[in-house]
Image 1: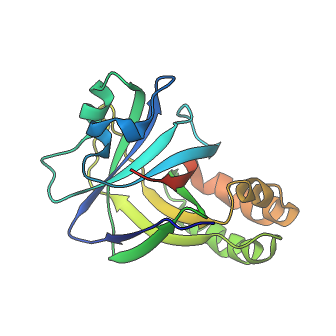
Image 2: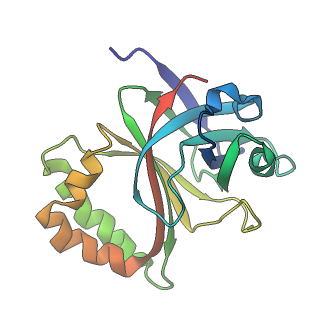
Length: 207
């Protein structure tokens, strides 16, 4: 029974801060007012298929009206928080998304090797038909983000591209990555195009 859904509007005139959060043992983000305050939605992380950061417990999405007021440093300063990594993003086109607790949502941030945008495009083109037929429901690419600033001051990081992808189940990522056709046709293009990838999958939880 999945009865919780959240409608989110990503607007071109707003900024979005996505914060990956590790909490100390016994702590729950839902009990920390600093984090709940103004959050659009909160995801409990189930897997981290790719990444150099330690696997976070949660990730949270905030909406901002200006560049004067971000939460990353405040969150990091909270006693309940073990670590936090935040990125500031915008959307090239407004998009609405219904997030529901029967699905899993991947947030990824990627750094593209210089001059390798074409390989990245080829990767997306090569992987799409495989995603349609690898034996599980195809993931849905819902939101494309672009960096809103270029700060790398702790706890912020800035990638070249980022996105939100809906999966039927978090284990489907492993099924796709293990698919022979994906390994042969898509993975080499990805390896050529991408120098670094931070990728986490989570399930939306009540704030």
